[in-house]
Length: 189
Image (cartoon, rainbow, N blue to C red; front, top):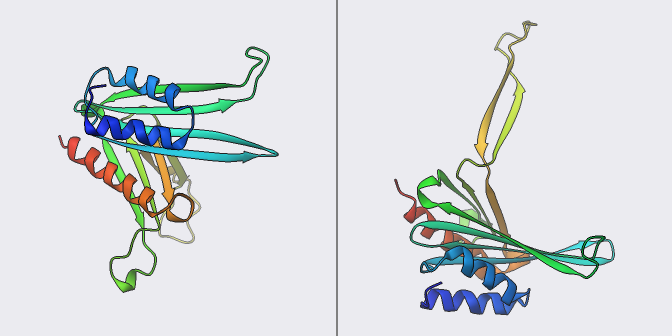
């Protein structure tokens, strides 16, 4: 990773989460492969599983040519690795492959004008994963009993991240929207 203000800011954000920052930074540095960091978003998400807390962190990084997605999870020991461990995976996607950046903003009290967003959902699609939603097709004739087959939609669903002001803070929501804007600007074909 080239030493820029944005890469130093990313390192500080990883340190602030306290979620294995050295491990996560090392994986991102390898995946970025010397390119400058243009924008990033760090989302640390603890989950509760019975009487345990499990942590997951997603980091998305924008470089001049690629989108880097990093996921880190912590695990209790198991038969193969008896000690607790973290797994970190990275995926590098060429910006030319990104087909869609879908941004959904939830705003409370919209009749009062522009308010800080209560929630944001960003879905990025590049064709690796899709979701098919099917439903029975029909016609306008209420007496018709013919089989009209199915109708549906195919939606790109490679990566989705939801952030809410209630859980993550208003700055986190705005940060995700800022990242989505930077990604959208770089994926104009």
